[in-house]
Image (cartoon, rainbow, N blue to C red):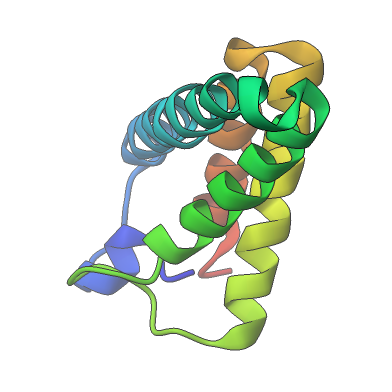
Length: 122
């Protein structure tokens, strides 16, 4: 992943890292876990049963999470390795969401992003 500051050609101060990471953690987990995974699981549970619906929602939301990082002008160029890595990260965040809840998943994502943005250029 190319951190936003690196993509823009400038460095970030620690406050920028925290704000960007918190925003990404909160917004991405809201979209991909709470809305997409939770919504798909709820919609499909009557058709496939709750367990199958949850697995299907986990897979779809994790693939969408990964794909979202490769689209748009700030998206990372697509590579199979990066896509698989982000899909697996989506699965991990989904499991955290399922076991511990939305807030813990959002904080986990935010703290991971702080780590990536802080040490990407090091």
